[in-house]
Image (cartoon, rainbow, N blue to C red; front, side, top):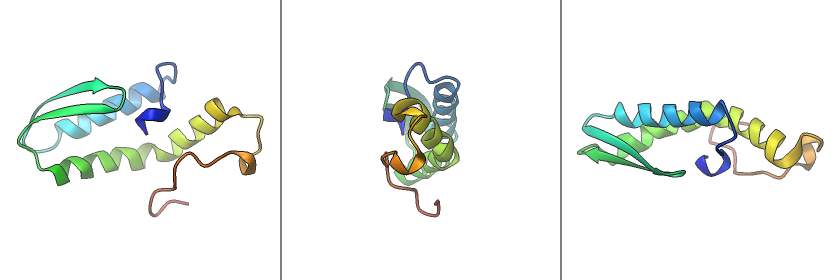
Length: 96
């Protein structure tokens, strides 16, 4: 998801970055979180990898529809009909 949200995509970018950091910091055993670059964060401490992934999955699920809509309207162009817009990533399990 991070590769589709850029610096000028506010307020979505701030919402996404805050949610990622909050999710990572909420995992038991995380002592610090640092954003390394646009698509990479480092979680220090002794967290469970499974718990990290599950916490981030909640963020991705929560912002999936908003991000898809934003990318379709801004990156692809709002003038194209939805049927003409390319799929940017496969739908998440359980979504339509």
